[in-house]
Length: 375
Image 1 (cartoon, rainbow, N blue to C red):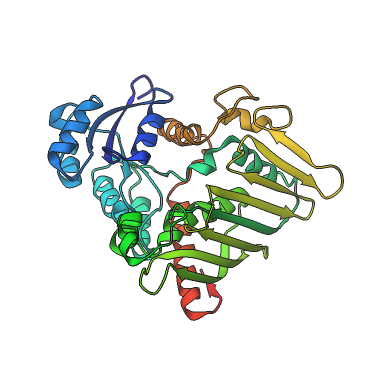
Image 2 (tube, helix red, strand yellow):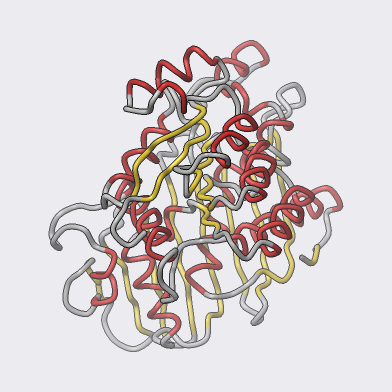
């Protein structure tokens, strides 16, 4: 394993899949993986055709994940890792099948469709000591996010007291949503069996709530949420506003929406402590704003001067843009290295996934009851 590439299998992410393209590129950034097998489409002919187009041999282009898990586990050259990039409702059942075959997992978010699935998958991972699991909450792998995490661990902003974070997009492209155009606009995201317990929280909110806990080191204690749907006819969760109390007593405010008109990848987080604050914006990821309670605001730049920890995760010299694909690649690289090392890793795992699932479950329960709900 020290000299050879890890053999990677893929479930999902076939023709016309943007996220599949991201995963495949990211897995190859550091020459640590070779894609050798996969299920790239529900249509077996399309799966074979697409697999062959990216260099996978025909006999390892499968028609479904069950066949792939069973056949790969019997091969002498079986896959080492499977990467799952299907809709949320299938993440848990696919992962568990490959865990039973002692194959490592890299999964797209969210961890699972709902809390019941999350509990099952979490317990399955913890019981199998032969495998490792990574969750691609890729924003956690941006160099300046990790710089912020370490600064907070070192006490640079003191005790965390408040966290304000949001993630908003506009999936409607500015159009008025109605029953007629919603199916074309949102497709499988309207189906709870596929998208899970909440569209906006699973698809966008899971990233943001993970980021808040990841950077601050805190866990959510209880929430008070207000979740709305597109309309009485289009019953898809599209907006959530949440008050949060963290385990150290800190307070939080969180907003996520998939129909925020003009919202273009609006992920931002501000963390305030007893000695100062930090702010990171995904659209300008190279910089971290550090505002001490006494003194001038400082803009820390990735890989430059006082942002020394970020150099570990930087791929190009400071002064040049770096972003989404690089962050994904950091997770793939770290995961590969973790299979042969016991050094501290920073990629999200099953613990992060389970905490996020509990957060989303509590938000849904709170919004329905109009009360604070403990996790």
